[in-house]
Each structure stands twice: as structure tokens, then as C-alpha cells.
Amino acid sequence: DAGVTQSPTHLIKTRGQQVTLRCSPKSGHDTVSWYQQALGQGPQFIFQYYEEEERQRGNFPDRFSGHQFPNYSSELNVNALLLGDSALYLCASSFEGYQETQYFGPGTRLLVL
Amino acid sequence: AQSVTQLGSHVSVSEGALVLLRCNYSSSVPPYLFWYVQYPNQGLQLLLKYTSAATLVKGINGFEAEFKKSETSFHLTKPSAHMSDAAEYFCAVSGVDDYKLSFGAGTTVTVRA
Image 1: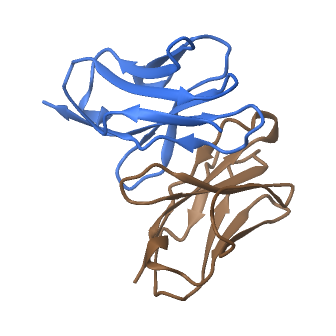
Image 2: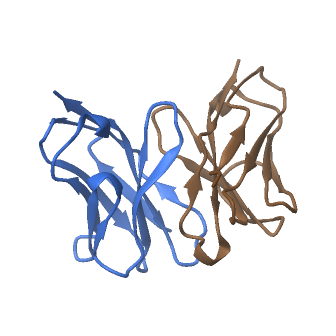
């Protein structure tokens, strides 16, 4: 049973560029959440997707956008990258009926230079 | 809005000693509470969760946590530390109608031989 997978594992970008991160949920899960974890801090909620719609959003600017596909996989897009966007980006999946239990992937480490 | 506070950013214990990690929550309604563990350069792994079924919750790897409403606490314990317990631990909270997880700042555990 495959868990949550994310790609790529590491990424280096320069300020102003755009980046797309990808996530495949755990088998049987239909909900995907994205979190940003800055160095030395706890994860911060970016948004959650369910039925291909953004269901809830955290306190992040519109530069952060996402998408969920019919197979439940998801993308996180960040435009106009800032140095402060350097972080570990975590994807978590859950099943709608048990939405409170989220299972995390290994993350994508983004470095913005 | 729900939030959690983890008391102590670093905890150092001897191998075989009790591990105690403190978490206090702030919530206007009975919350869902979680403990996650993060090993270096990895994602988050669910240790245990409280969803009002029982106040003492047993998790993986010998960890357990007790929900105390009167103290608004959800402290994590393990009777005997093992070297493999060295990691960062996060307490998180989610409301019944709140899809996101709100994390504490984390507690780093080191285990001395």
C-alpha cells in the first residue's frame, strides 16, 4: 500500500521564478492538504483540496495556488518566488469520512536563491 | 480558532528514562488532538490521536498521551526512552468543523546513551 508521495524531493529556484510541486495521496484517500514548514518551525497550513475544489485556505497570499485532479493527486504552485518561500513543503492526504486524520508525505525541500 | 503550545523546545533524556513532552491546547469546543514525529529530512509520522473516545490514548512505538480537559493539556509520554526516539515531536489540533491541522512549534528530543 503506497503512502503519500511527493515530487521532486529537492528544488532550487531563484527569486521571481515560479515552481510546481506534486503530490499523490495515499491509496483510498480523496483529500489533499498542503503545509509549509520553515526551518525550525512547525508546519503551517496552506490549503486543502477536496472534490477538485479548494475547501479551506490558510493565511497565505494568492501567489500560492493549487489544483486537484480527478485521480485525487494535487499540485501546489507558487509564483513570484521570494527568499522567504524557502521551506519544506509537505503534502498530507486523508479520507473525507475521517478528515481529521492526515497522513504526510516526505516533503519537497525548496530553496530560493 | 484552535491552537497548541508546546512547552520546551528541547528535551534531553537518558536512554531508559521517562520521556515527557508537554502540549496545551486552546479550543472553544472539544478538539481533535494529535502527536506527530519527524525524523531528520523526513515527513511527519502520526504517533497517536485523540478524538474523544478515550482520554488515555496509546500510540505507536510505546508512546501514549492523556487528554485532560480541566488542564487543557495533551502531554505525550513514553516510560523508557530508546536511542531511536531522537527526533522532533509536534503536537497538533483540529476542530470538528476545521479541516486544517494547527501545529505547535515542536520539541526536539535527544537521547543520551
